[in-house]
Image 1 (cartoon, rainbow, N blue to C red):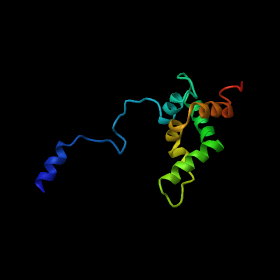
Image 2: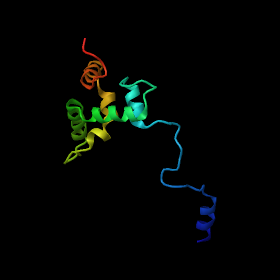
Image 3: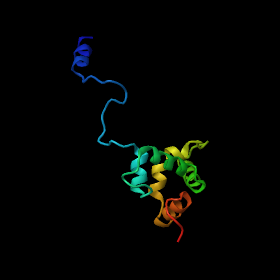
Amino acid sequence: MRNKRRNKELRPIRLGAMADRTRHTEPAYFRALLAARLIDPKTPIADAYARWDSLCRDKVFVRMSMELEKSNKVFLPSVTAPFHNGVCVLQAMTGRQIEALKIRLGVQKAA
């Protein structure tokens, strides 16, 4: 019992479950959209979230996300799969698919 107390005293004090600081100052969806060039680095976070929300409602994006979810051998794919798998789907998209996505989202005009 004494060892446990002594070890507990030596542990760093944590302020909560998510107390560890990360090196990122912006949210993960912001970084994912930035990597796919769907937003500019100067885009406000509120606008980036609106873009992320519209991206997750895109039919092709949802379909690709559900396919990714089914490939994990899940019996019942989650309805929230687009939000969870969004970054993986963006990384799996080809250049043509991202260009088509930009046109559907209204980021880029059709040529």
